[in-house]
Length: 409
Ligand SMILES: Cc1ncc(COP(=O)(O)O)c(C=O)c1O
Image 1 (cartoon, rainbow, N blue to C red):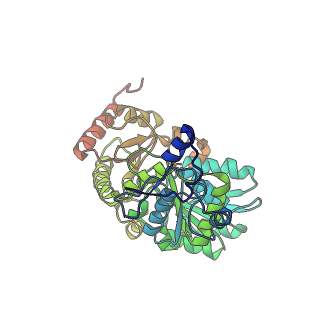
Image 2 (cartoon, helix red, strand yellow; image 1 turned 180 degrees about the horizontal axis):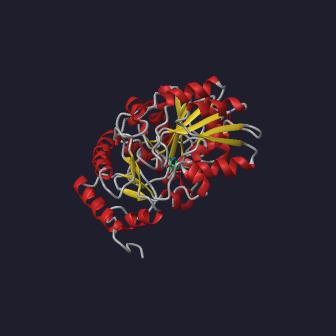
Image 3 (tube, rainbow, N blue to C red; image 1 turned 45 degrees about the vertical axis):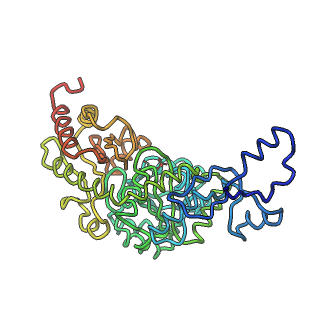
């Protein structure tokens, strides 16, 4: 006989409806461990009485009340993510953008200023340039690798937040996080980093001095393109401020989403090793192809920040970007690929090729794209777990086809 959580079983009523509702909401109390974190698919959790509820909802007593505030599956994901990043606490969101939004909103108010690196995910750029700009928050963009420019931007006016990506989307610029954290702190800024492209297996920014580390769990953490989620980790007081924003804006991860990310986390290390091996093979292939102007992959000695990458990343990871010269050539290449579907995501068992200027970074105009170092012929490749020989052959034939006269006539 299972145990039931039936402290409140009194007054079940005698009519069929009352009995059916009571019978079907009697939750088993499981006091054993289980192989997986259960999906706590419940909107609310019960308290003993009004005073108990007041204690729970104000976090004076550990437990759960309303699943928008905290839910056990999302909490389990947040704790796992924080642990892997060596951070005190974490919080799990319904998307990477919800995590970025709540993190920034927990820090800034009207009149504040953010210094951000130029090459960031398009929606992050959109969030900063539209949503936060409308609220009176100013943003100055800098080149993450030009530390004098970063220092000058930080010194120019009080800065609340220095924001960067460990490996920038889509340029694959590798930020020197130790240096950026040190510069940000010297100027009184909180330092937050989007670590999505690296994952905690490749890099742990919090251990390098970064205050807040954010990831889109839609990508490598879950790894199978079947969930949208995000996570942030840092010091407990910073995470509590982020949770306070989330309570009133409602971005917490759904239990099933958190479950899928927890499942993905268990194989992250194995997947990332294989993604990295295949990516290195493809990066070398692309580097020696006549049609390719340049390849940015942190695992190649030719990468402009190869030394930082070697120091900071466990491996080159699964994502690279390369320049085919023109938008036409990039589009012809992507259209000719047979394995990757035409879509825009990354960090999955499936290989994806994306044309950032027209997809993930469409928020940037021509001038902003140029300033962010995103040429019209750029292709971003996220390498999946298909057999590498098949990927090499596919890339090979797509390069040939993209070069054929009239390929996209
Ligand atoms: C670097 C980076 N950060 C954040 C996001 C946003 O994540 P999500 O789509 O889960 O909101 C993305 C999405 O592509 C991304 O590439």
